Amino acid sequence: MKILIILYSIDRNGAPLFALDVCKILEELGHKCYVWSVMDGTLNDEFSKRYNLKIVDPYDDKLSSEIMRYDIAIMFTVRTFMFYETLEAKIPFFWYIHEGRNIEDYLENDRCNEVFLKAKNIFVVSEYVSNIFGDRYGKKVNVLHNFVKDECKIKELSLDQNKIKFFCSGSIIYRKGYDLLLDALNELDETKQKMIDVYVCGERDIKHPYTKDIVKQIESMSFVHDRGELSRQDAINLCDECDYVIVPSRDESFSLVAAEGAMLGKPLILSDNVGAKYLVGKDGGWIFESDNKNSLRLALEQAIKTFSDYSRKSKAIRIEYESRCTEKIYKKNISEVIRSLKIVESGFLRKATRIYKKYFCNPLYRIKLPYRSRIAIYGAGKYGKAWNYLLKKSRYYKVVAWIDKNPSIPGVVEIDDVDFNNVDYVIITINDSIIRREVKELLLSKGIKRESIIYQKECSNELEGY
Image (cartoon, rainbow, N blue to C red):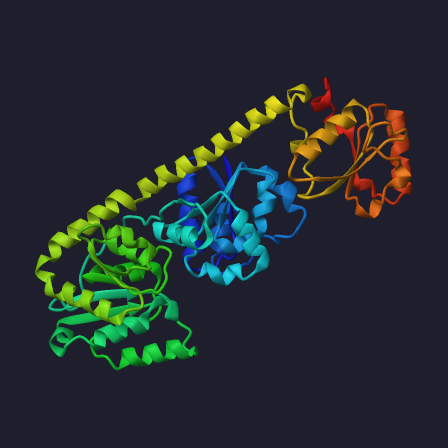
């Protein structure tokens, strides 16, 4: 199948990087991936080489017909809301939202909020997000957990093996909770501080006051080591040399850092506002209360105190990874999602075939007009009646006028009674070619553009027999 991946941006961060992994999975499953993005970014080369990247304007009317080239679409993140209604009218799709509580920032946009509240086919990356959407917005959504590849290939260790080593990675911003971590570390007694080393890395805007303050604090703490901005592979390598992974975020819909830690067999210390907390299981680490430095301090103390039991916890978290977060499991899960979309689509088509059996098939799928087009029907014979029925039955178009030279049916009017300023397209439903040409000339004289006139003959095969 041809699968369209829709992104808001292709910068080198969470959702676009994960979308690259998803594209690879889908190709391994035998599908062909294509990518649209609203904004360009640093991953342009990666997407362009393999996935026919196209930078698009979400409000371009041409996209409505271009979408029909694909079999299924996946919208990544809430910021792609602009595509929802266009897709809804055309092909099977689902909305793969990667935001957590920070979705509130985007729902301040009235249009985004409207689309989100009415949307039905939403998937999120964790039960944590599912609960937020249910409690705050009354939304029932599906969960499709993320995955990380199993890629532990460290050959030699370079860090001090006499210390207990903690790893924390992520952009140095308030939401990531670095201030909580540093406060908790400062409140450990001096004996425990001497037993540990903490390694941090992540993107940072050094001009931002929060970031500047965090970097300054790190520099003043002898047992905390800032490794700067690392590539994903270098960060994984550093993580593999450490013993524990800490994710102190105030809000994290999933956390690839936590998943990578689990993949490497590193017990996790996670805030209860981190979606990947399901990986901790019964014995794979500790979950502390979000935005509570004392709760985090207690978790750190437990990790230090029970280090003699480290091997058992390491095995436990690795088992959780193997049973819940592998590439193989994700392949199975996304295959089931795609299959369910196709089942829903085929079920809809069966219903459409039954309803429109006398027309042989539904011609609305052939005319490919933009969503919410305002349509006038010319002709009140059997074909005009069929088009009027189909268009009014549809949720995607609006019939603004039904015209005939000699109106005899309620609701049918003469052409002079129609305000064509409120008409986007006219469908001529007359079978006689001579009369059709006359009607066309009449419509052109009323100011209708030539490209806005659709001949019934384009769908005559579908309507024969009505």
